[in-house]
Image (cartoon, rainbow, N blue to C red; front, side, top):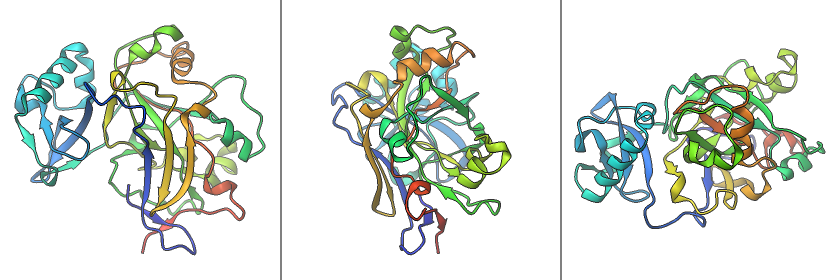
Length: 300
């Protein structure tokens, strides 16, 4: 994610990273959405041969495959089986230099977020540990690709970073049991819940929505790592770098409400559909709680 500079530091890039210590090396899949650089308007679903290597074009491998991740997930096991066969075939591979990665999911029905969901993040602001999940949302139009620019709005002077573990729903469900919740998750990815703190904390009646949902305020990706590729999603290192400097570093074991609880909780209220995106909260290190506060600025 390329973006913005922090005052008094010549920082130009914002990156969100999870360690791979809990990723299974065999049988894993990293699904992506991309477009060809020579055909920007044509979206495709692909699977990585390995992290940073070539991309297998699923539609080239099997013309019956859909062109978007949301439609692909709606196929259920049929789509996943095709992706595994395509990966094993070694055919229809595109070099990275020929494609542009998009967010793993575009135009989901919902982007569901959990606030105050890391113990250490609550401690940094002297806030009590929540007794139940704090749920808010971002509009889907806030989603942008992992290497796309964040647009710094003229309406805010206090834009901040929040690295988050995200997951994407793989099948329809309502009133999902906690012990069955993982089977409804297609995979996990990286997000940044970019936040305009002035609008979140001072304006709009202190409701969070407007401060969280400016265009491009939800960088997502690069890949959707399938759920069966992960040993334990709650033992992942989570870090955010602004132009190479570490600004957040923690572990997903600090989550107050783990992914299964979040799925079960939210599905009490709304039906979940394939492609729905969940952001699971951020660890400490955000700019607003630094002394003095630090916010992102336009890169020069």
